[in-house]
Length: 261
Image 1 (tube, rainbow, N blue to C red):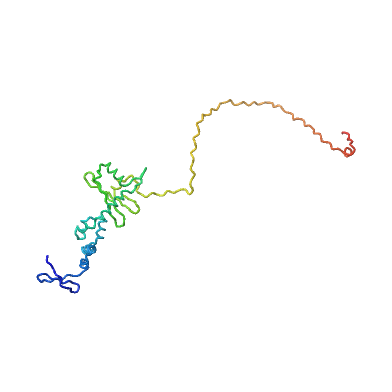
Image 2 (tube, rainbow, N blue to C red):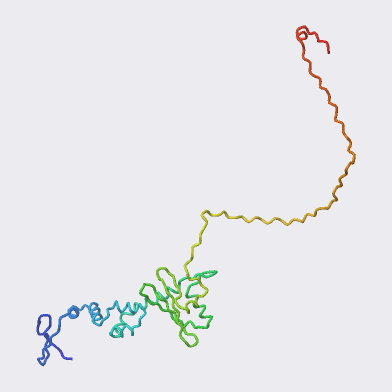
């Protein structure tokens, strides 16, 4: 490596010379000015931008599911540079995958989390939990795709769900995912119409004690007698009621009684 010496300035260039008298020029740009100030963080951003991808763009692609090798190849940058920025994003993806497994799924009896249900079903199929791997990557609409990869019968099987981290809902995306939660209602709980006024609680009446059956005694019906010649009944004689007598003036004045009629 040849050592150069600063000679002077020429417009926006540095004039440099070598020991053998050969002269060189170096353009003064933002990267050179940042390097002279020893601002390493800003210099790293400028170098990544010069390579075609900024650190934020690298992390966005890792978050969306791309591997470090894919990002390095597509951005024409070194793999070491991608590794420098992928660590925090991979931790975020792992945390999202763990949170998605804790979503409760409704089923008859009691709720169960996605992780518990999948673990039971895979164990019943003879799948070793060491061969199970969870991952998640973010979609363009802000939701996440939850990915389950496991080995069965010598082959790799992948199941995917759509996970809404804000609303804490999860939906099967393919047939494998549906089969793993086939007895679970994934929909949101539906509203049930309630009566406008609450009905009073009905009190269960105590059952009446059993009673012996009533046996009715059969009695012969009375026979009706007919008199061919009914006897006439004479009406009772009317008694004449005696009218009360009214005293006369003589009886009132002189006390004399009037002769009876």
